[in-house]
Image (cartoon, rainbow, N blue to C red; front, side, top):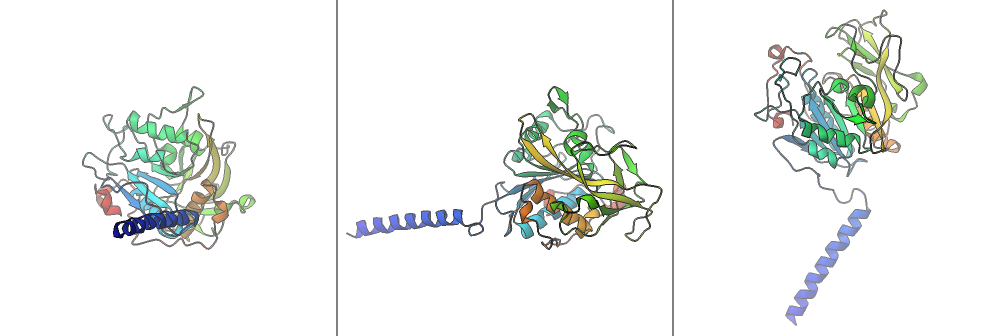
Length: 353
């Protein structure tokens, strides 16, 4: 009798647990979903909290040498996870000692250089890619993860140097080589529009497109980086791109500096779509601002976070008053290549958590 009672008790417990799991699966936010990427010393993971992004996974790539993406991408990941509920994983370009190393040369400076980004295989299961890379030389097997992502129909957010993010990029569509900046993001870096490391950018919302969801709640954008020119003089953004923010060069690197009246405002943020070889179409957002210091602007953070929602077709969840507060300490060094003065040295990924 006691044995049968024990069996019935265990059966009831299993039934109750299954019922609880069924209830949780039907009530958003009641049961937390586990982060889909295992913890590793090679990358950073952030568990999503409460928010509309619960259950969605964003991979952020920090892999450039000038604009301190190694500070900016973890900051964005913390913000997206805590305030908006997204699981986030930050991948870095690592040196042979598994350190984040912005001082690594590029192939133009050293023909033997080869970069690597551990964790790119997680692009297969993520929902959105945010990429901030610059002139990377990746092994073919690493680039293959990027190529497969371009065919997945999943969305992309490109930040600043992402429009010249890769060398030896061999993705082809209809037999023609695709330029990641020009064709996927909507424009490659052609020149600095103004004085590099001397001028700054005042963002001006494009009035005709003010009602676009990505601009919801965006009021003030300024950053100490300069404006990029991404199309020839006298031209414009490629067909299919919708400009959201123009960047007016300022004479100087303070927010109250005067506009350089000799230089026209050029688009610095836009949306478009991309269709890969699979025929699946993805939403794309590109912003050519985005240095770590630029992201001290609440307006730029809101613009970028709003783009995450829009890219994931969650524009109905974009609120003009959603939280954009930085989580934890954020005091990034300035941009540039003077690594000694800026105290930029190789560091393990955990340093940037």
